[in-house]
Image (cartoon, rainbow, N blue to C red; front, side, top):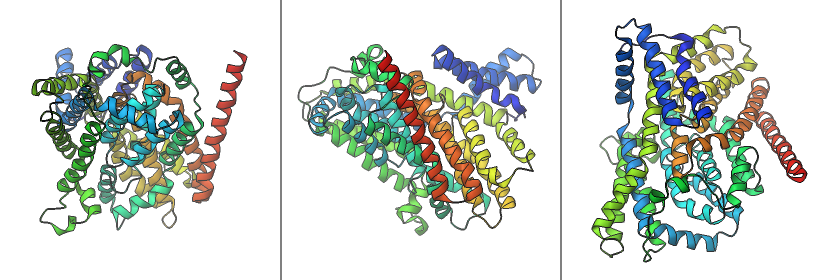
Length: 516
């Protein structure tokens, strides 16, 4: 299908989908309406006949084209793995074991954050694994599923974007290579890490929220409900899928060994995929292999291998019969169907905007039209554009893929000998992470809610105030950075704004609760 430059109309489909999702609390129909609206704009713009039929045909053609079956397989098999681990009693045994060692709610929250930071290779892998491992622990301390989903989400993309060895580093490096502005793509990526204010402040926010046991906005209400015994709505709706009748013979190793196998096989598959054991010596180092890998097929292989390990661990010992194991696999696949469906719809609406309606062309025209932009404001403007684009399309990779080739030349013209290029590049990556972190149509947002067994819209609404506080604080940091080009001063400014904002909300929450 030939693209159609829809201009500002290219932003309409995600705006419709996001508005409807937040209004109706129903994400499936909202995404579908967004996709159909974009297809309608394309059909009318291209002057096609049989408008209704062509609109539907175009929507499903894009959907089929954009589906990443490796990710679908990974999520589906991981759902099977999670279910059979629970069926074997591994989740129950681990929950009891961890509860004896993790003393208190604060320790549970900080342990969840630490595990999220530890799994930095890929955000998809992070989202589902951390939720699987820590959900029994957080449930035992009456931590809401919304809070768990927020910690998972805030330690997924923000961690991956500052990890030199990750699938994200490879994606950024491929875009940097296309600019020809850097001698070493990896060195340029590493140089952006201290200037990636949104990622760094998100991590600090998680630590502060966890250590101080403080919440505000919708998250506060979710936490109060959790203290009363209601950790999340999904418990009631999906109990037959989420909580199987567990074997009493399960041991803590019945959870730890399959999860450890998943991690080990993921690393090995990523290295194999990246050519570490291949014939080209250029990829015979860890950094080069990880930089050359493709995460999705590697994760699909890893999830299958981990499920095979679980089979060999459970069935020969008699913990599960062959029939019970296979039935558990099927139930786990069913449990992941909603998340997989949302992923497909999210990919489709991104494809409609990017491939058919030419959203990148429109954004590029906005940037190039502002030729008189003051150099000091460039990082802040780029950060705002990246936030808006990533939130609208739900993809960080697509956003920095659009903006990096535009931002680097513009920054070089404005400040050829200064550090503005690096700061602007960092602002691009930071703004891209914002949308990936909190957009309702972002795949990591979807997977975080799935991993935590939290209602998707509740996850979006509860974490949005936290993400916005970090985004505003980062914006202040980039405004200061554009003029001072000093890392300590600019990052310090953003950090101070974030801490003061949290203190303000804390005082308001205490005042309201005292008055009540």
